[in-house]
Length: 267
Image (tube, rainbow, N blue to C red; front, side, top):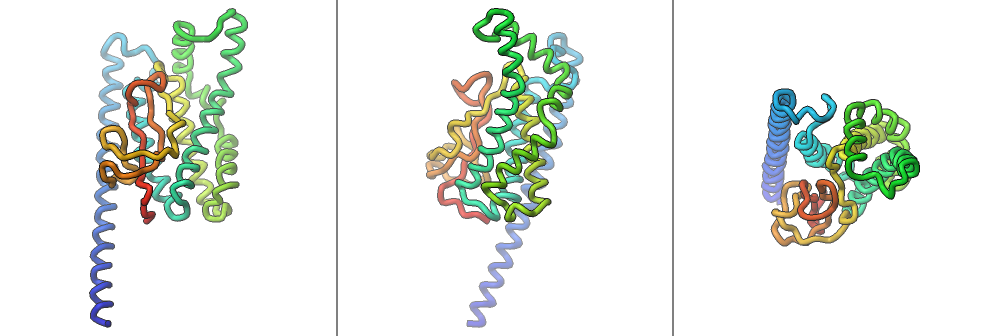
């Protein structure tokens, strides 16, 4: 019995060491990936200034491909960090889907509430059925030229904390009283709001397909990404993070949805 216990402890120690090493390798790869993305963005920024036609947006607002990289980076890094650090210790799959849905939805609604009155006024004044085409294109260029000030009017710490409190009223992560956890959620919402705002004023815009969140799916590496990096082809799964589309939800997404297997074992 003592020998078996000793052998089990030895195996457990090896597994722990391998897990620690794997985590370190993942962090190293994330760091390298971030450095490469920064380098690409720097090159794209230089191209913007060198090539006529690229300087059609505000100097500090990202080009379409730059923004696409930002959104992809947010989903791969920020959302995964929130998943492993905040959600894994306390929630099941339904709880994880709820967290991401109830952070994204109110952020999108806040953006809609900010811009809709402007569009309604223009449609009324200009006798239009909808503000689309050249009018909207010109408006988006104006948004991009002054996007930081507009963003700060649309979102502030009060808005971010209100979303956090709404989530915590249901999920109660760390019993809802741990200030450090509440601050982490608020910080995540803040980063999310910035990404969603840029997606909205980009031309063409980038759109989340919120309708698929929480749906069952059979895993397909060509159409989906795994939230934790490990999943078998054809495995029964659940969609955790939405796909991203260019302009409208049609054709193929520019960023694939993130999934987890239905029998996922939380670490």
